[in-house]
Image (cartoon, rainbow, N blue to C red):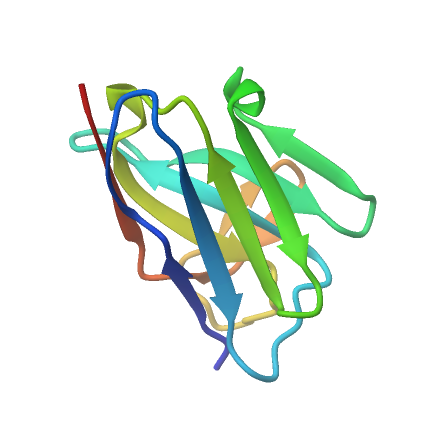
Length: 129
């Protein structure tokens, strides 16, 4: 069973930065597409950013690309989300997800043409004003 694990969440003041990292379990390979989602209290989960290494393309929701950057480290088998100029609106639980071929997954989302079938447990990001 493939697994993902996030790290790097925490509390930061408005205007600050955080970098989230997602590590894939041994035996899985991040050679397809992967991304970050977030869920604010009382709101639905939303896609934040995605990287498709097949086509060397990145996607961002709305204007988040002006402050966020998604990247992958093929050597470490991780991918990251660098977040700058954070505001209270960025507060929420952040989840990483990837297309790892988990055929029996019950949580599948299709976003930006990527079928994401493996999810991390989430990491909390809290931005105080």
